[in-house]
Image (cartoon, rainbow, N blue to C red; front, side, top):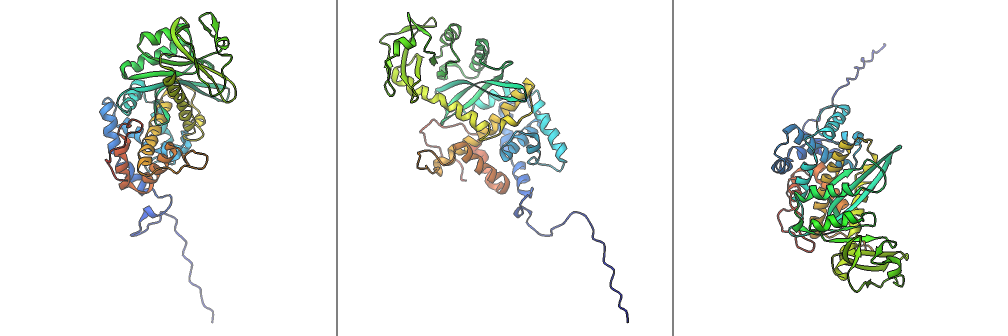
Length: 395
């Protein structure tokens, strides 16, 4: 007797339905991420309060791109598309991200308005510097002016330069004048900058705007009738010297103080502050280098962008700044409630920006209810260094 085997049914190919399953438990699920994005109304209100002219579609794209940047730790469109919400294809999401970088509503005035409100009350120290990289054979060169907060410099205004190398005096003046409209000179503690940012016209401009200066000069620059090297040739590392009276530096009557770096370089600073305060302030100039580092390889991989057009680069830098400030803001708050361990070499195990980004991504992806509490922290201004944060939310 021959038995017939039952015909095997052809397997059906289609979406898998998990009845009653909690999709948020599975890696790669978008349920919790979508919930967090939908609850980001606090960010929408925050942006709308300081930029009421923005359209709703622009606001939604802006928030989606910012949260995708934080989750992807990248500015590359391919990376962003994997973290943007919605059921459209990856190509559709890439086009949506690209529209954000082309949106003319996101101009410099929009970014300044949003960033200035995050500054701590009182006077702030401003730092000026450049950051540059190359895309193929195309040099990309940004001039950035920002405020020092918690060991970093918060960019407030920037401009992509047409050429590689040093900036022009008029580009610096444009940055300062535009920022003064939103942040008056009475709130500037002063301006620190490196040897690149010198010159008679520049020094005179800052004085006329009521901005105090602490700017490093070259050892070949003339101080009255001698150059800096002749004045301070005897200075040793660890010793600080000051010329007994004010001298003319680029036509301006200023104090001049000097020391030597650990590698033996002569560090000469023309200043409007006392010698002790000058060194305290000038040491914070390095904070802008920490910001640039956390924008690039150690943070949002800014150098991976394929953009070279100036207006799009300016928007890209602004969007990275907004995403970065959210990470720093949360990192500062968390470090006061959960201090970051300090390693044997005396530095934190992770930076404040990395610390905030880790917790922000975790809340965005897996803890949408806690993400709501985190949003309340992100939209608050920084507290002055050393001041205790108020217990507004529980995370």
